[in-house]
Length: 300
Length: 292
Image 1 (tube, chains in turn yellow, orange):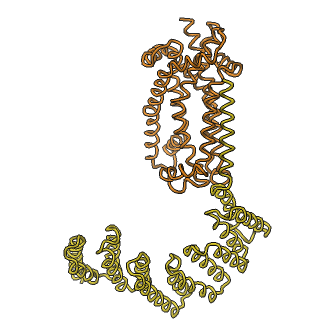
Image 2: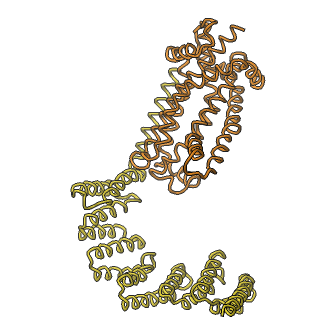
């Protein structure tokens, strides 16, 4: 019995020591360190002005240590960004941008990451109330990283910025620039995921300007280009149709445009499985419109 | 180990003798220690499942069963106790049953003042392994499919109470917060109802099904005593449950590893509780047999 117990104790120690040795520098070890640092950063972010600078420096130092110790880790981007964010919290925006640039240097192959970091750089300019420089960064994102999610949403972000400032001229200009940008992406990259996302953003751009009819036409294009050739799941197509109906009922108060779009799809694709569904839909929309007209005449 | 006839149904002396026997005879102590060490070995391995090199094999399994996040720190530590609990079921059925049988044989030898031969007794327990295993399967099935759903029904009913204050609200909170305590209580009930099952398999060489019925027959008139014999050491587990039920805040903000500490504490306590319970029951069984 003694031997069994001794064997088990040696086995436990052996397993623990050997597994600890093998897992010494794995991602889990870094996740553990970063979790602790992240908790500290959350605490610092609660009231950064009340935090003594030493405390910021201590966390920054430890983030740098992680970067130095685990340069090849898959999750090493986080400490790079944490250092930059900590400088942002310290309101040392210039150093924060240098740190963001350092992160870009290390992840330049990953366009999605670079676009995200560049938008953070733009935000630091915004925090300094330097919209001109921020806009320059954002325009670079639009130009060089249009295929990324951040790049795709950037034209709308700029438009929203001007709208928030009640700058009517720039708002209209920016929305128009966004429309041109999305149209050009659709033409340059037809039949791609980027084109699909561009169509959706284009529709959003119109709807944000309350250009309901134009928005509906874009949704009609999406149905023709993606739903008819079954490039998107049927559920997604149904959601688009539901959105179109909602806009028609709530904003336009008539179903003329959607009915026209649906009829066009049915004429062009008489044997398509969607035609049956659209046919029923068009009939019910017609009845709905008739009832609404009767109710309106009764009121009069 | 021998007790006088008059004291065989007195709770405190029986428990005190058992406690003394556990710590003064390594023959009783060691089988339970082996079970505890095997569990510690499993916990040690579990700690490394999301780490290199085990993550290559277990990472995708954890992600598939619990979600992508749960193969990463600190989220893995939330699922680790659940994985360990499933391992414990296996350890109970496959190993604990054998070691309990082994310990019972050692206790019986000590009780009869026979020199304990651990190797021989282990082989003897091994020869009864099929019945011990079946006994454990029966106990596990009764607890898992007979008793545990009762708590599930109770909790499901309590969650339907919509009151946010007053008597029904307190009733709801008592039921919801007390679920783990009811499980412990049901465990005590199951263990005490079938308290003589293992002694009958080992000491009377009965097959599991015969032992099952004789157990119920012999338990008649002794049940409440055995129940308190099982309940008293099990109370040691209550503080751990109290801590475990209130540890979420600490685990999510300060020290996620507290969940591992809880597992180690649980193994140590179960080792202690099991050794006292089975020594007490066996001692009582032998005294009862002598007095028949």
